[in-house]
Amino acid sequence: MFSFFKDNGQDGLHLTYSRDGYQWEALKDNRSFLTPAVAKDKLMRDPCIIQGTDSKFHMVWTVSWNDRGIGYASSEDLVHWSEQKFIPVMEHESEALNCWAPEIFYDEDQHLYMIYWATTIPGRFPESDRQGDSKYNHRMYYTTTVDFNTFQPAKLLYDGGFNVIDAVIKKIGANYYMFLKDETKDPVKKHIRIAVSDTLTGNYHLISEPITPDWVEGPTVASVDGYWVVYYDEYTRHRMGAVRSKDLKNWEVISDSVSFPDGTRHGTVFQVNECILETLLKE
Image 1: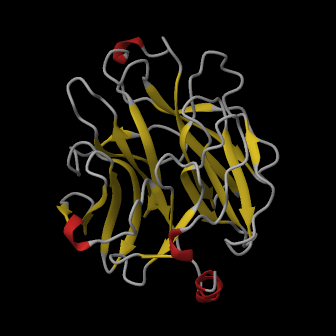
Image 2: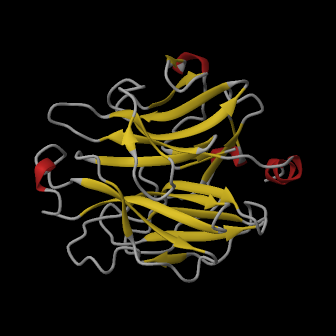
């Protein structure tokens, strides 16, 4: 499965599915499954869904270009959703400009969920203030929760000395791999790189040069037939792209081998069982 948004995220959650990880088919005729209802702008960009230990699907998303919180909802079947909630994860930072592209990771060791996202706090990291677009100079932050009702205070997750957004973490073996976008504009980078750590919540360090072309964003990662496949949004070219690798070191572009529904933007890949898909196919 792949959760995504279209256009500016104003019509909400879209879903697509694939049986081979390369050819993706729209569900519900590429119409929205859930209309955004929280925050002033009422957007649903960058939807991230994971299935929790409670068997529910938990989703977070970007509610606005400029807000100090994120959206949250849950579902048992991806069709019927709970009441949407606004989670003010950066409310304590009065100067924070935004909360972009939240993701969820379930920590099996600690039995909790980590939610992480990108935020700009003007003046906080002056060494890279002029590297990004306009006023933005992001770093990655996180919070943890066991129930999506109470949340620990937000903390810094990753500061690599450069403007960074759209991180997604995958545990591979004993290590945590963070696929991230270097958002530096001057000089132009705008590509995906990899950082790694032996702990989930810190000490990440870069281990790769760019693994994608420039001017891409929104990486999400899946294991497909012995390859690690990273899908991404080629937002200036208005299409989805992908690279793959067997060893996380040598990457090949396979964008011409993948196809997505028209209008697919930044999303998250996840797995469901057959009965969930059968329900979705009836919509």
